[in-house]
Image 1 (cartoon, rainbow, N blue to C red):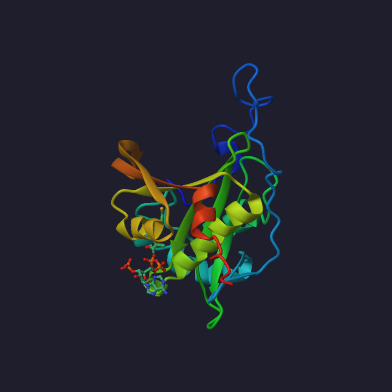
Image 2: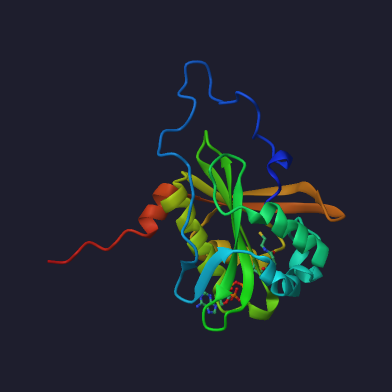
Length: 228
Ligand SMILES: CC(C)(COP(=O)(O)OP(=O)(O)OC[C@H]1O[C@@H](n2cnc3c(N)ncnc32)[C@H](O)[C@@H]1OP(=O)(O)O)[C@@H](O)C(=O)NCCC(=O)NCCS
């Protein structure tokens, strides 16, 4: 289960030469503008800056990504300095999405303190279906202030309003109650409960799938009609 951004070659459904999907005679790719994300950084929210991670973030990243409690329901293991450096150099170095199978991870920095407190990610699953997935990780030292919600809301904004996807999903371990509450706060809709669908860290785990459609996002964020 995300959040983490595996290298392209580890993901199913991408990189298949000539694959466009769709049946014979069907429109092969859902219509819409090109799926490209090239944000201007930093992205500012009420209390946060979202921006690419750099080597200068290593200590802050280690402070939470090295903790077993943070890694309990996510695919990655507690990281050491070498693992963080390797990620920063490769998978986390991407700052734009120009094609299927690509993702970005953004550091979440509190404006007031300058501290990096977490990271959020966005992954473009399918060009054909205009679908993406989001994920979030927050330092337990900074939880309970709504920072993860604020950052995840900004990443949904990037997904729908900039990348222009049709559908965004979030996959959450059914035991991860804080993450479930976060998805609900974001207005994401629970679509599925998959029982024992993954052998995960030594046991079968249940997964809850959340989703949000472009149309639902637009409804949630529609400006109130101007009153005469
Ligand atoms: C999932 C995770 C990001 C949630 O962190 P969090 O601190 O609960 O989330 P937020 O920063 O949005 O804070 C929300 C909490 O602060 C409270 N809060 C306080 N001020 C708030 C504000 N201004 N806005 C929103 N919530 C606020 C909320 O009520 C909520 O508390 P509750 O869940 O007890 O009701 C965090 O537990 C985590 O990183 N876990 C480990 C990694 C992980 O499992 N990631 C998810 C994989 S799918």
